[in-house]
Image (cartoon, one colour):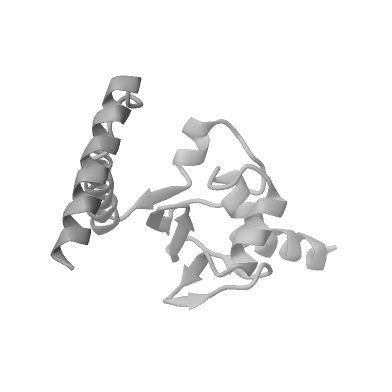
Length: 143
């Protein structure tokens, strides 16, 4: 009987990384978390992890989701998925990670400013074509 009590206590000290990522709401389902881990989107100490990797309090994980790459420190463990406020208590994002994400988001936003807010009108398209054709004619005359 003492052995089972000891093993359940040990079980609460560690959680599989796929379960923890799901409980911390980094991924919508455990299968998506598993696919991300297998795809090399989750790192511990700069190295890829396996799905069966056990998470412990104090571990620093790097998680990539789309354009965003977060570095988080595990504060608490959970095998159950709660609401977003409870999930946010499971980790702290490092200040360096926050600054890097904000910088990259600002850069992406600046690149998107070059895109127009609307599609060209028929008149705009005529002017564009006229400009392109006059440019093509100038190129042909230079040769």
